[in-house]
Image: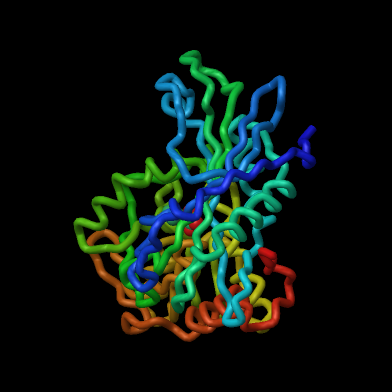
Length: 361
Ligand code: COI
């Protein structure tokens, strides 16, 4: 039973101790944090309790906390957008919280009261509203996280957890901005196996991706594109995003079969493309099909989709030391149109026909 009536206390930072805000035109990604955060705790006796919005502070964690040993850690990423008329909007927050509760189930962690946490998030952002950037393209990135805090070294699901939300004003995720990225197709390491945790947003998936990402970056690539674990044949996803291709005017992305993250931007892109009447396919795509489509010119575009990355056009792939340029290394019209339309909805400049946008106040 999840208690949606949990009480939320508020403890504010005194006015004269508020942080100095960073230059909104040089935010980068993930470097600065707002004045306040939300947190709550769970144990078997009390369920979720001690929910509060309070000054941003370090966690108190026992060195035996189970998250540090057995990795029960899940998180989400969503954003708040400032509109031209100074409203603040969230994009599909209920979907992030629903996905987080699915990740919780997969990682044997307690589900949390999503409706109540959304209320807490709105209150938190309202309190720190001056942190939601005014600068063009900049947003407030929101990071809900849950970790196992019980101090215990036996291997089992922990019986104590902390949930928290921290917020961070951000610019573009990639240094390329919206310019095309270069992607290395990884055929040695893999990200996720069928039956594993690839479709849960759990910290270990990201730790497991680092070795390949470092290798790709050393070779001059922005990110890794993962292939399936069994045959190293089918396209899965990029390190930070889902992946799309436009082949012969059809928009194609790998299906959600348990080993890739069910992206909320991915779902929004599929929906927008369908609204335009574009043919859309969620199906297995082999790397051979992509190589062939590059060679015969039928691959018109490719781009990644994610909350942090938004729409990230791909200008070049490298597979087995061979380089393939896509659309002359330029952003294609589908990626551009999706980016424009998605951002217009998120920033409240275009009508939201899908009920995706949630105002903060
Ligand atoms: C997001 O897009 O929100 C993510 O969690 C990806 C992360 C690597 C920044």
